Amino acid sequence: MIGNLGELVRSEYIACDLCGSTDHEIVYSKIDHVTGLEFNLVKCACGMAFVNPMPIDESVPLLYPSDYLNEKPYLGQLFENMLRLLPQLPKEERRLLDVGCGTGHFIRCATNAGWNAEGVDFANWGGPKDDLKIRLGNFPLMNLPEGYYKVITSWAVLEHVRRPSFFFEKIGRLLSENGTFIFTVPNIESPGMKLSCDEDVPRHLWLFTPSTAKKYLARYGMEVRAILHNGKIYRSYPFGLIRYGWNVLVMKDEAKCSVYQNKSVSLLRNRSVDVHFRQWIGEVVKSLSPWDIFIDGLDLALGIFLANISKLMKNYGVITVIATKNGGA
Ligand SMILES: [Zn+2]
Image (cartoon, rainbow, N blue to C red; front, side, top):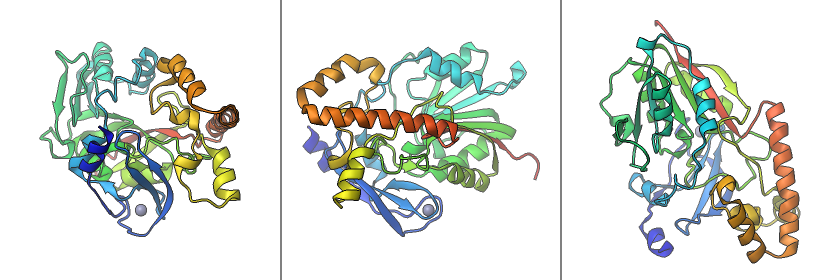
């Protein structure tokens, strides 16, 4: 199965979506558990990090197993935290678009909270859609009313799209004057995140920083109001640093995730710990040596410690950005 999928994926070298540079430095390479292919994460001088060569448009859907979103738990608290970030508006102005709405759970919650909420996604991920307004297709090319939406949200989506600039541009057009854009993206500048293999490469095609997020927004007429580093929407941990230190810094090996990633964490394959904890522990005990489990345990403790420090430093591994469209000129 994996072999066949890997043969279908085609990739190409690309320039940086933010600054156009073709001069990039390899951060690490990682073997993808879905396709079996090895992908490079590269870093650009402007601050963006991305998968290069990058799968072409037609190949991107092949990176997602059919149960991709089923593996993420439905967490009522998560959607409550998202709703709390929305601005207070009179009922007739509560027009919301959720870009990359997935199963539609957030639109459902927003609708229940009195919002006129719509969603867009490139694929149908299943879920309780029935009466929800969800359009499927290529968002930047969709025919949607410009200057109409008071709020646009995009939860952990912009890192998955091939051309983030197309999304920022479209969102800038669709927002009403002084409208609010709220999104979460990975922050590669957070302590340890650049070296950690814990990012979901190659599904995460682009990794941002607070400053690159600001540059994208400014380019398309939006301005940052706040950047939250509290981990209340999505969490992120820099795992793999202990083996990185030993294998890459001391032993001078190439930076390959297959060598230095946290082996126990990699067995999760992006499944949620909350849902799969017992199954995961079973797999860890069955497939790893006591020594590896010991090192992974230390590494987990270090990753959790650094993630908490990064919240205090206001440089967390997943940032929630709240921006507004500039009114007037
Ligand atoms: Zn760049």
